[in-house]
Image (cartoon, rainbow, N blue to C red; front, side, top):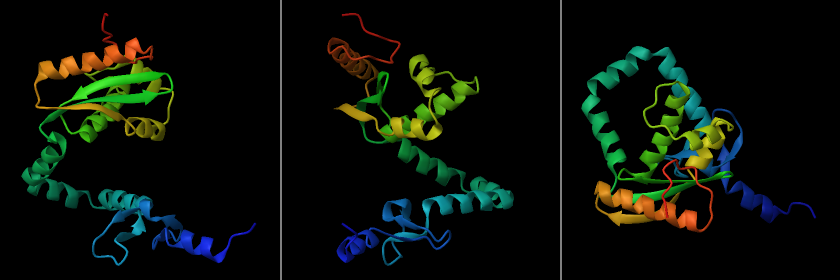
Length: 193
């Protein structure tokens, strides 16, 4: 059976052609833009990224000046993103060789971003937060695979407040649950039963 006109119409309504590279891509491969008729940028994410890198490389003084003049604004935006809600999140990063259980009082996306940063610093020999089993597994992966694994993390439980002892107790509880179920863990701080 070939492609019908209805099938073709359905496919065409799920994306558009990038004005920069000329390739047809799904709408999810474009950043949002309220002013656009379809609500998406005219360039795809890949082309936007390449253009941004080129612009920053060609005009470093512009970017240095902008960051220097807007330090407080940029700091406040980053803090708002990093702090998140007033709660504690226990999460799991599942891999082919086991799961890593973690806990954070930050926004979950900020903590997941930190996992990638910690791994990069570990590779450069500069890290203070080393997760040996998780990082050893990351050594076998590409950057894209690491990104996909880290960002597919599962929130196991969310509790109100940011108490450190409660956070540690929550992490211990979930590590015990995984151990009792016989699941392999990438945590180095296993809990005695």
